[in-house]
Amino acid sequence: MRYLLDTNVLSETRRKQADPKVMAFLDAVDADSLFISVLTIGELRKGIAIKRRTDPDAARSLAAWVDGMEQSFADRIVPIDAAVSRRWGELSADRSRPVIDTLIAATALVHGLTLVTRNGSDMRGIDVPIIDPWEGRRPARTKK
Image 1 (cartoon, rainbow, N blue to C red):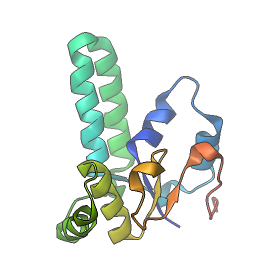
Image 2: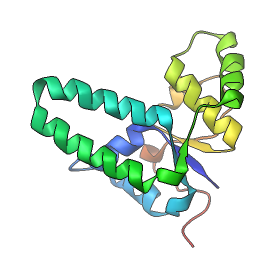
Image 3: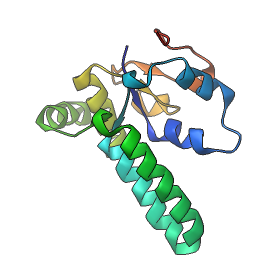
Image 4: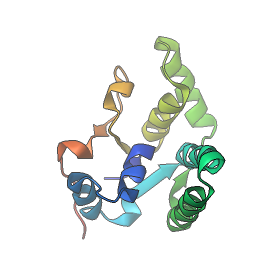
């Protein structure tokens, strides 16, 4: 099984006291089965820009972490392409939803990925497989 990590999952790993269930989930899967969306990078970069206004040191630290994360996921960053855009259009026609959340769901669907997020309620009505690691659910396939 392959997984698309939502921004909230990556952000959790940076917390001083990260949720042990989230960390156990991530530890149980091969790194090669974990993917991120280009949108996640955008959300994290937006957070850095906002943080820079009030706490430049924290922004630099966060930027260094995001730089490292981008390097470690370099070949597992999923783009928004025409197929994802088409799927997003279909999903968005049903009802008004947050654009980024719907694009991430479309990305998971097009690429056959299970979405790992705490925000499953944002995906109601979208037939995307979801795992909420905060619930303590283990991945379907563990490390080799």
